[in-house]
Image (cartoon, rainbow, N blue to C red):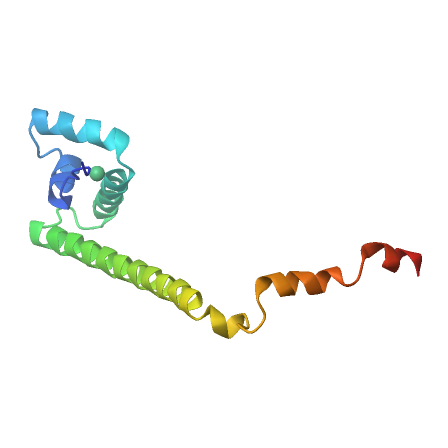
Length: 128
Ligand SMILES: [Zn+2]
């Protein structure tokens, strides 16, 4: 069974302490085993620190939401880039696999190639 992750909204509320005790216990036990959700939580914590360091005393909720959305969008772009390069490398491996005739000539079987290595014995080279 696949691991059920918490939503970013839920984790964001956890960071803000805006959550019930039962939910907090659930999330904390999940965070112990899940690196992915831990990373999201630490991102939200960093974000909170940045917001607290802003010169404005009270950052309005709409500004906060906008920043959260921006971070989320940036994560989507990052995921897209990772996915793109992963797809590209899989395509490359597939290409290498199906087109190996281009890189390794078909007309010479592997056994013959190995035989041609045996033509020059190692001892002969040493005696010269
Ligand atoms: Zn998780």
